[in-house]
Length: 92
Image 1 (cartoon, rainbow, N blue to C red):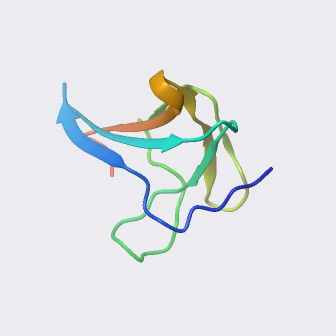
Image 2 (cartoon, rainbow, N blue to C red; image 1 turned 45 degrees about the vertical axis):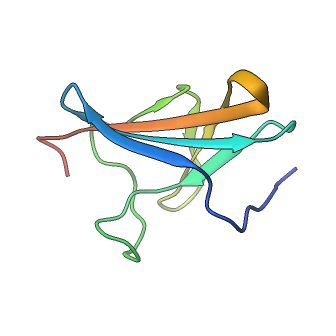
């Protein structure tokens, strides 16, 4: 089942240990998958993630073209989370 969310999902972005983290949260009883890609700037063409990217949980796959998908992980209170990280230096 595919669900479309028309409103921005809650997210947190921060830097720690020479990595940039982006965490996205959603509340749902259904299992969720995040459809995503990298871009040089907002509105730019999508491209595959650069060398050094990781996701948590580590259940990500190419979904065609430059896009990827990552399963969300269930956390407390019906919430689910997906996290992307990349090195702060040495990758674009």
